[in-house]
Length: 326
Image (tube, rainbow, N blue to C red; front, side, top):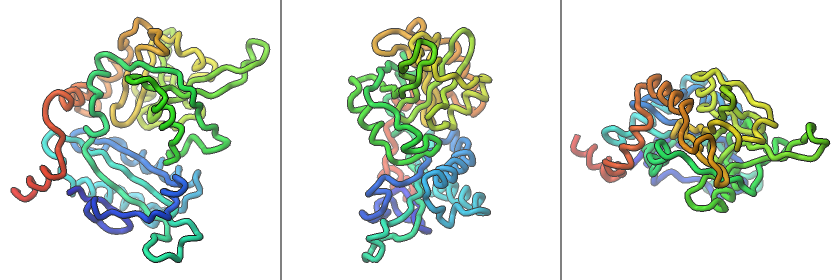
């Protein structure tokens, strides 16, 4: 059984319990991060934790003791301790889930059994669960559609915060045709055509947007979460932040990529049934993914493709039996 850290203790995952009156449950009021490892080493863990702290500040979630000033190194060691207690098997990678909640809603704080104070939990499970079936995307690319669900504006929830209020993502995914990824938009003023509005593409559920046009690599940051993977692409390519009107016309881009922690980067080959570029993963995408793989010492594409084609998922029971043998 996997082990998690919750409310100051390491406990079996099956024993990790939250109060049904907690604000993370009742209002999706929680900040969170999800990381991945390469060869067992968590990638940019400090950057993820820094963003977690920033998210708490933006969402008015009090920091639990583990994340208060001066405790960052201790918290990083906690993440390492959780991973060290979860051996997912040969060739597996870690996927950390870190959640911070403000605790119980005030009106329920005196009820027996609730956790009244802010808390944090850290879980660790095999990365392959998140990317199961993704192998084909590296060779065939991703087909996207424009979602009818729009991005939540900053005036409602700050996009710089990674939060658990993700109903708009859920609706976009449910409404998208099978086999496609939805892209969310927002309305922008169109000052170039006598007024009116344009729809600017902002992000996909759980992924940022990068496009290549006329030899330029552009990243989308407007009203979108500033992804750790997006920053990595910028570091690898020297990408510049694109203007909003440029991301209103991504269907004309030479290449379009999705970036996200579990898969790093994927190429979009069509939007609303029309090809992006020549309709295949482009040279800029392939070169960037190769640089990323070299940087982390793992063939990112091949690792995920191998998981799809060969070994079975490393189950908790298999982990338990392995631990008994050793």
